[in-house]
Length: 192
Ligand code: GRF
Image (cartoon, rainbow, N blue to C red):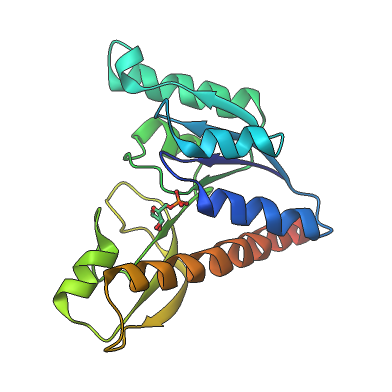
């Protein structure tokens, strides 16, 4: 199975996924990393581990549709089976969704449907909930609304500040995302 990772920033989830699949004997290839941001650190990480990188932004095109069209062409040319969003800070448009039904997944740093949007960790912390967590879900046309695949809870204790909570959430993400991907890969292999 050929996986594409779409990311806009740091890429710690990408790194965790690559690490995991290097150790597993599964027929999975992290075929490429795409970023909409020129200076995204995920691109450095990908180059270091020998994963192909691609970068372009909506600003490089006449409109968002053309951007999506180019991204779709890239994914199709590279024969991608599964699209993994890992800190990709854009909405997936209708063309991509239609071309990859139930084949685009995302990780979100809260227990959805609580605290969707850009600041899932901070919003949970500020609200004062005692349990938050991480969600992996399929993408649909809403923001953080697609069918949930897996969740893990993360406790917020009186010792936590926002930074320590962020660390705990990211650790949980780095465990959960590869594990969910493995399940999806095994499921798809069984079907063949
Ligand atoms: C993660 O917290 C993820 O849940 C959210 O964006 C962040 C990406 O982190 N969607 P990284 O770029 O993988 O380090």
